[in-house]
Structure formats: structure tokens, C-alpha cells
Length: 234
Image 1 (cartoon, one colour):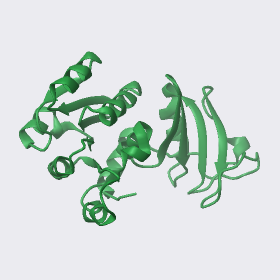
Image 2 (image 1 turned 120 degrees about the vertical axis):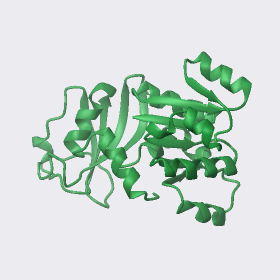
Image 3 (image 1 turned 90 degrees about the horizontal axis):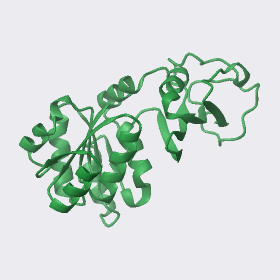
């Protein structure tokens, strides 16, 4: 997947690193020289300029981008960038700070796909918002391991299986299971997998796509395309 992230500060750069480590393509937009140097030192592609300007977004490749994350500390820049990205068919995620009142949240919530408070979420939460859909990162355990929560869908090949019949790749393990709208617990072998059920899985990054295909029934690219079409706010 291809991401454009506006803002190479603490939130933007950490989120970019998490995405890149999972094999995604990331381009950053930043206007402060110090942040640009730091991002380029970490071998990121950086476009210098104001992310709320369409010419800058076009230079960053917005026309061929799946998701735009407007993660600066400037609400006006973030919102303007998201509106431009919407016209290019991108999924949009906009940062606002906790200092903003609830009415401001409601004002912008219907215009973008998702709004995040990075002070609460951190980089993992920001990545979840960018990815959207039916897979949610819970924690990065090691450079090659991640704990994810997945929701079973109609298209999942394992829909109707029991836990004992579930065969995940060798580098993936089920840690917890929860029926729809119920708390997660240690899985029982006789539990059946149905639409809306959730599984928490520890998996190597290299097999995450295969795990997703089994439990969700769609690839990463298909999931993002679906999220972009629905345009819902979580």
C-alpha cells in the first residue's frame, strides 16, 4: 500500500516507521528543515512544502496514493489536505489534538474517514486508523512480530470452522477469542467461528497477509479499497 503522511514530527515519523517496517511505501511532506533532515537521515522520501497545497500533494504522488494521513499539529492544514486528498480518491485520516472541543470533532468527523487523537493513540493507533477495515494492530512485540485483532467476515474461508479446525501458518498463533459483542477469552477448541467474532493473533509480519486472508477473506489492498469506498468514521 502507498501512504502520504503530512508532518514529520514525532507522531508522523513514528507512524511512517511502523508502516515502512511492514513493507508499505511511505512519502512524507514537511516544511521545517530540521524535521526534513531527520526524516531523510532515516531514508524516507520527503517532499518539502505545505501539505495543504495541492501542488505539493501532487508532487508527493497523491494521485497514486491509497491513504493520506494529515498528522501535523495544525488543524487547518490537516483538514485542507484531507479535502484535497478526497478528490483524488484517497482514504483520509486527520489528526486533532485533545485541546480541541467536542463540537470541533463533530464538525469535521463527517468530512474525513477517521479522526485521531495521537496523544491517546500513539503510532500503533495512528497506523490502525490509516489501515482501516477489519484488522487492528494491538502491539508490536519485536521487529518481525505483531499482535493483531481480526474480525471474521462473510468472505472468510474459515467462517463456520471451529477453533480446532483452524490451521494458521506456522509463524502465527491464536492468543484470544471473542464472540460478537462479548469479551475476549482463552479460546476453546469447540468454539465456532462466525461473522463478527474476533481473534487476537501473534504473527510474523511475513505471514500477516495469509492470516488476514484466512480470517477476513481479503487482501490488504482490497481492504483499503473497501474502507475508502465506505468512508465511515469509527
